[in-house]
Length: 207
Image: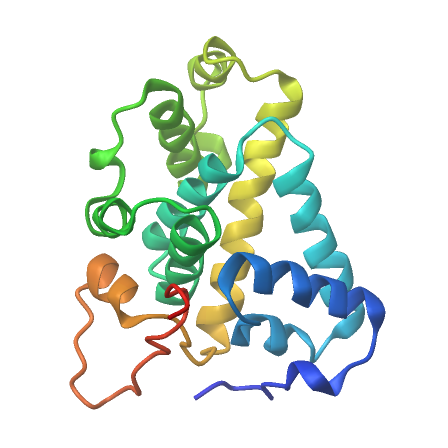
């Protein structure tokens, strides 16, 4: 159970927050509990999620590349909530085939063959361990696949941004409201009765 209040999206009429909710609903099918946890500090919600939108929309990495980074960083940080969120976006929001997304959650970088994407993910996972781990050769590798300094800065910020969401949802025990499929794949989660099931309709095609 979450350690802070989970608000209802209807409890705010702030147009900036409602725009953020509309954006996430387009990508995920609904407003997730993470966003309503952030409503406990609405001023920062607007700044933080606004910053995330800039990172996702105005840099050199594509949205699918960004979601791959989010899945693998969240998986490395043992955050089932965020792993499932980015799986949902990659599958539901961006139309990536479900079996591939599940394999990515299950096996990580080993399922990625494409050279540019694998280089991005190797860098992201290394940066997630600690910035001091990064070498000149790692940065040069990003330039080799076409990133400029802007894209390199974007990628480092993405890792930090995802890690901060991981930390928030882990520390505050945000109630899991995604399909159980994603945490089963990434963390071998089983429904043993100790935790409630997720929302197993989230991100499914409308019938």
